[in-house]
Image (tube, rainbow, N blue to C red; front, side, top):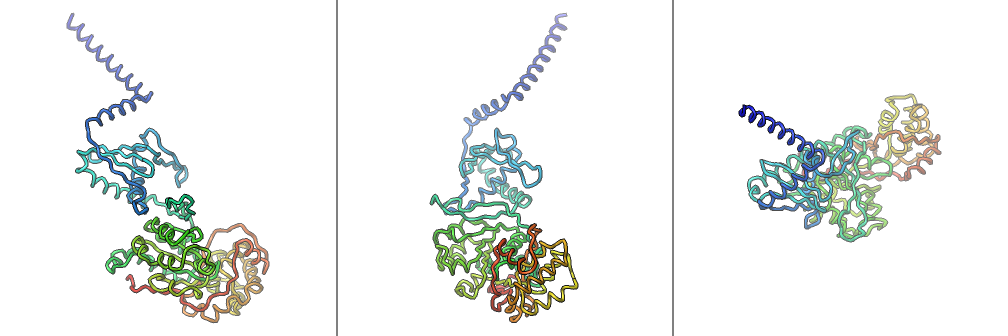
Length: 481
């Protein structure tokens, strides 16, 4: 009897203990006490270990962006551990209904690697790695390599292009001189009107550059390339830059020289650019002629191919635009500073047919011969002007063509004379470039009034086409294969 009683008491005690443990677990989880217990246990455990700390600052001593900082940040934001943090930031993602998590200042993230406990502390502009000294030799180097590979893979999948613009340095500390927004320009080489042979040459040149790292290093040259896009306003130079960026998946740094204080400031802005980027200066001839920037000509020359450009210009493409290049100092245009020259003339009949096909879906029309005759007489407009007339009348292709004809006869008379006389089709490579955009919803009037309204709305300049020059000059000293 006593044995049965003792057995029953033992079973009852075990049952009560299990119930109490279950209730305690429920209380700890529901009230958050379990996190407090974990923190206390972690602090007690830390007393028995020696830790080392490694700082990863956002900028190095030369005020260049620390690429490791970006890689660590991408890696940490991809961890599931961030969801278990006490707090974090929530942002909407690029996809519909997507929610993404980002680190908060002073936030601590726990990570496990090869059995070692690793902590990251997000301090002001610095990420601090905390690791046990006993684990450092075994896991530190493999862990950093793991961060590199994971962040690169994550970047390839999630990377969105960015457009950077420089801002005036009010504080004088030269930090954060670039502000960025997502780069979502839809232009591509498939959506621009361009002579196919020239388009293929440009794409081939860009592709060869992107794969030529070892070739450049074997020659002892910095891995960079520079383009000059020149021609009247409205001929598609900016859209062409966007197509280059989308083709290479490069970020764009749009450098406004009017916001640069001196030559030293220009060099510093170059220091803060990153690899895989297009560094763009638009309307360079205007800055030089009007002297509307504090940067000197020697400063611009040094920016293009100086020691600093050679030291931190790896995997970058510099793009300069001009309306005309015949009044620019020849020192700017020499090989080494400008590798590729591309001319963007006013529209001719070949480009007009490309625009008509893209904007109106017309491969042929009974009015085409009349349009061709007008072009042959020397009339021309910019591709942007013709494109906007087509957009405004896109619901009636015949009306759109008549509007273009009237505009060419009244407002475009003589504007294309130099192009025709000097061989705009002379070698088959001098074709205009124009981005095929979405309808803007702006409606225009017929004839001369149409173009005048467009000029008021879009600020187009009436510029006569430049003297004869080559559309595509590969002036580099080597052919990249």
